[in-house]
Amino acid sequence: MPAPRKAAPAHPIRVLIAKPGLDGHDRGAKVVARALRDAGMEVIYAGLRQTPEEIVRAALEEDVDLIGLSILSGAHMALFPRVLALLKQQKAGNVPVFAGGIIPDEDAQRLKKAGVRAIFGPGASLEEIVATAQKLARRRA
Amino acid sequence: MSEPARLPAAARAILRGDRRALARAITAVENGDPAADAILGAIYPRTRGVPIVGLAGPLGVGKSSLINALISLLRASGRTVAVVAVDPSSPFSGGSVLGDRIRFEGRATDTGVFFRSMASRGAVGGVAAATLEAARLLDAAGFDIVLVETVGSGQVDVAIREIATTRVVVLVPHLGDEVQTLKAGLFEIADVFCVNKTDLPGADIAQRNLRDLVVQGRKTEEWATRIVGTSTTQPNGIDALWEAIEAHERYLDASGERARNERQRLSTEIVGLVRDRVGRELAHELEHDPELRGLLDQVIARSLDPRAAARRLRLAVRRTE
Ligand SMILES: Nc1nc2c(ncn2[C@@H]2O[C@H](COP(=O)(O)OP(=O)(O)OP(=O)(O)O)[C@@H](O)[C@H]2O)c(=O)[nH]1
Ligand SMILES: [Mg+2]
Image (tube, helix red, strand yellow):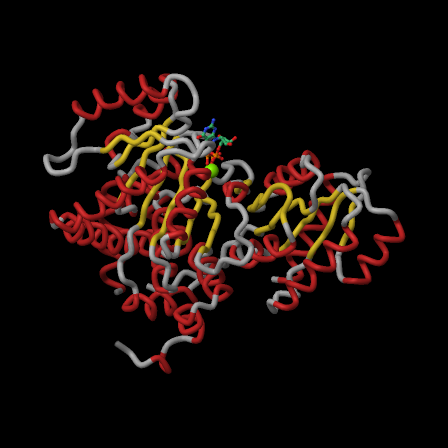
């Protein structure tokens, strides 16, 4: 009997959603997590108050294709570059990172330059976020 | 044992303690990636058969919080711990939100712990097989204990039923939940009952009710199912919970049950692997082989019954082998 020539099954995209920083609510992150799940992704939801070290550790252990960080406080300018640097240090600089939250335009520009692949403000639609996440994850695979 | 130089690079990396290689191998197992074959084959002789402790129970009873508390206890005594937390996949989208990691706190740098979330991906039996193979990789990577968390629902608790060496069923002091759990068939599989949230009212009654049920439903003469009360918020009873788990592990060795169970499990695993493989191949053949497609057409036309078709299919497979 010849080996089945079935096309390899599509594997679910694994994505880590975390909320670094000290401000304590994650409604936005949860809404995004559910939207990504409904698009067929496996969302590892790490929750609130994650340090950059914890985020990178989770990303590596969970072997995710993508990292999404939600942030509301003004601490993003320190946190994001730290996450990116730690990823590089672990030779995982190819794992794309996207961000959501209230991030002023000029900061957004600088973060993009630093390597954050996409940034969504409060007005972004879930469709837009899901589509971008799919594109970023696919490019890596 | 084969000399290290002949092992696949990924297997060598895992045995060396490379966490990234370990994480990737678990992904390969989950994805049914053929690359996993060589890795699993290479690491198997290095596995020691470490305890696999399963925690199952209804939504929100505190399984992840208990795991977090057990990790602290075990790390304090120098033992390393790996966790596999299994959640169901959505039957609609195939996706899932894996939220057990939320309770895994304050361990940014401790390399004595490894936490992996896993989605059931709906395949019957698939969860158990993937969890078992992940546990073997974690064993080979050097972790002393593997903790497995699953929700006590049919789709995923099979992972614990089939692979855990000690099975802990977690409940809360609330009769409604208990009755549901008993219906879900968790009762028979418990080696240890954990009544969590004893800081809430009703814990004493819950433990007493459970004790009555346990006496009626006793599995074996040698092992009397233990009942332990815990609270992760105080915290309280975590050491007693671990002591009960260890007592069961000791019982497995003393009674010879570990060896018997292992033989049974491996037999089930091997047959399952063949069944999956052959099943996939047959399904493919039935759709794509011109002769066999006709067989299916005949059954649809009522000129052949499914059992007769199955017999012919089996014969056709044997001829071509
Ligand atoms: N009062 C009290 N609450 C607890 C205790 N243990 C856990 N909780 C709370 O119960 C809720 C669920 O805890 P988890 O540890 O996530 O429970 P779980 O069984 O892993 O939940 P799922 O994985 O969603 O099924 C959280 O809000 C915890 O803070 C306890 O001992 N006492
Ligand atoms: Mg949990």
